[in-house]
Image (cartoon, rainbow, N blue to C red; front, side, top):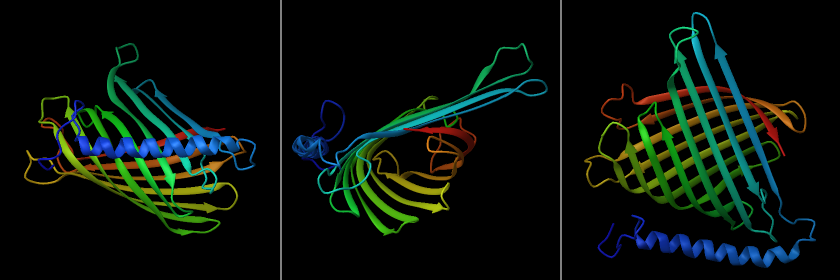
Length: 274
């Protein structure tokens, strides 16, 4: 942060908020112009996906695990008449354990996240993005993580069955721990790589990699979070699908009372599309 980046009342540099405001204003104006074409066959619409998964054991092991996710997209696919896309997403995981059937369950997992993305299609292969992201995770002793910034994505390859997309972004990032560990705060760089493959009519494979590096003045080294998510989805019909996913996250620095710098989760989820 330079001496000209005066902090705003919200804790982020005024220059970054100015960029975000300018992008939102530009895209809002463009959307207002395209909404006059509502009778066009390419008029944008909302679509989405909701997923839930549950597991419960009682007896020698007494555990409960519940997870869910949702994503809502306005104008999912690129077209020249409607260049703006909105995406709202969220996910959660709850887990508990009890030493016996009738004993009180204690929390073992409590993870949640929410995000918003505003995309402006520059071409069929590229887009500019403004985004905001929130997350928390009691397993990693993370109380609150917040990020807001801008980015760019480009499609390296696309055909009828396969797609490869790379992305980069700049943001401001803050992270607070639950055990008193010093917070992480500063400008962040984000790099991403996504692959999506369609195998047959009903099977889809997704692989996402994300790297986030934060330049915190109070730390000698870059604080980083690296995440990989692999998902295999089988569509049973037009509305319902079942998905097996595996997500692993590495932290370059953990909370003082944390026991591992890596967390991984496997989920089986029933999805509903609309």
